[in-house]
Image (cartoon, rainbow, N blue to C red; front, side, top):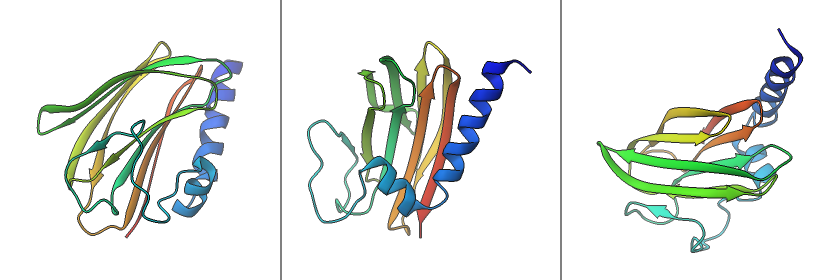
Length: 146
């Protein structure tokens, strides 16, 4: 195993450990769902829902340099969100899913591609899927509070 792979795996385990519970993850990203704030124009909302209970989808640049990220969300074979974002180091793109169901999330960068399913459950108050992108690849973390 080369040094870069070892460092990447160690960073991935650290991110997963640090995100051990939803509260810790919300605090770390600075984007908890406290209060009744409306989403900003920079934070797309997908679907019709009650506006409070949603699944947050976060794509975070965990690397030390600016990174371009292609993001696509599909539901039932239809693209509901497609964006290309240039994220400065330690910055993130965030979207909220309000409509219950399962979404396919595709994130692609020069360092790799990640495809994962994201579910907006009907019975959970808060859920979150985060993909950390770095020069070592992509790491997915999911948490929910039901």
